[in-house]
Image (cartoon, rainbow, N blue to C red; front, top):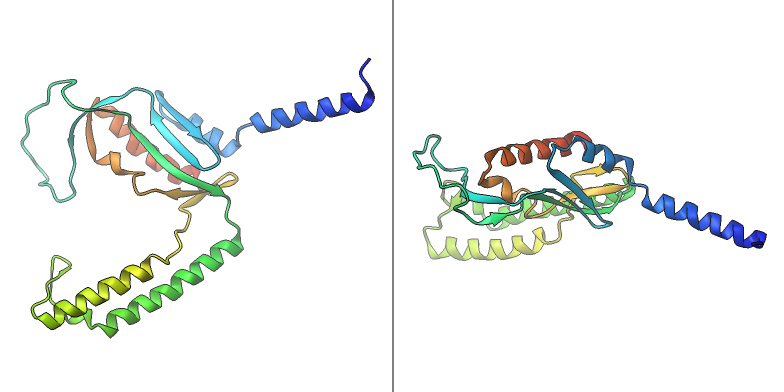
Length: 205
């Protein structure tokens, strides 16, 4: 016969294992809303939503491409194989205090950036399509000094979470949406990927 304290310990351990295996309801709701053929994988530090089957890359979309572009239909299976996925970074849910402090830091750095532009008179440098085109050695020197100082300031900006999902704060990564610019076979996979990006906005508060 098991001793009483051993029975209690075993019971607590069993409950703990069940609790640990219980998914966060917010992640479960998001997973349930995904189109068929997509899988949600979540760890303590990362959320990945991926298509179950690799696709062939047939091209890529560029924002500055002509609205209408003549192209020949690629042969099915003629491109590189990729697994379409959206990858997000996770952290324990930020507190109001963390958000307030981060926003205050970014506001202060924003003020320093504006002052930096005024100090180097970068607005006086002619621009073409948003890019500065220094016309004299003095303008070139000012632009180089400004960009170096600006890089140091922007490196201190605090990246804020895009939203919260359950007990986690969700952050976009540099490559989170990179694959949405691809054209793939089958094309409906990319349509679903764009839909999932919208689902994240709906489920992530």
